[in-house]
Length: 283
Image 1 (cartoon, rainbow, N blue to C red):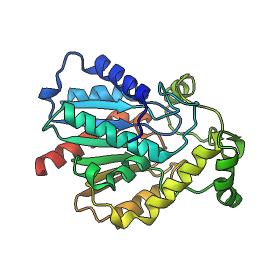
Image 2 (tube, rainbow, N blue to C red):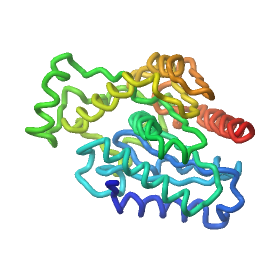
Image 3 (cartoon, one colour):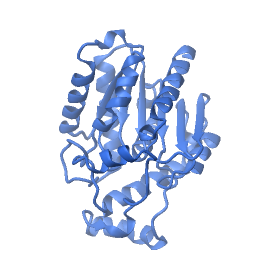
Image 4 (cartoon, helix red, strand yellow):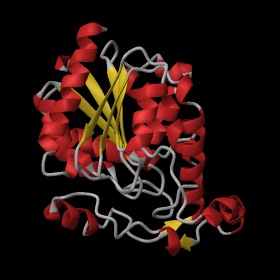
């Protein structure tokens, strides 16, 4: 599988900072964090601390072109590479922690990556379940013509920044401090979306929407009803159509896109922890 070595370095930094005094052997389970588009895994340190306080270990990785990983900032040549990275990363975590149940967490486009990864039987069998916040499902282009020309432009000018698709002005949290922290973070990409990256999001979103009925992994999907970046109705459709026997959904009335950076972030994290505990009690 394709893999970015610098993504692993970021993961080791996160683990060493948060888990230095607590060996994995005492954890009831491990959560692997896959961040969303344009951000990085380091933004989830507070979530990681809350997980650790409840005896869950935490790993995370940065995608190619994101955070501390290699590649042009904000440029993703293929989300299938990110899916492959996720599978390889999960496999290494399992090897390092034999017998410890593992969960995958994905936010936004990271949620789409996690969901697609779970469609591979070899990956699904390594998982106790997945958690998706505001997953990028049934994504629509900024203009209908974009969908028609995106495949061509993604080959001809893949790194070109398409200003017409920039969602930078859409609020993603109701917490002003969280917004300031996000957009002043030098590791967060704030430029217009690159053509290939946008095409990859449309491609993975379309694939998943066509294959909701093929999903069998246990999952918990969380979405804010006021999200203007990804579609909460698509999350509801995922829940309704997926073949998974163990599945849950929670829609938060009036909440925005970055659920774990909303004012109620600790309550949302607690919902995630409660779901993993329920899953482990039944497994």
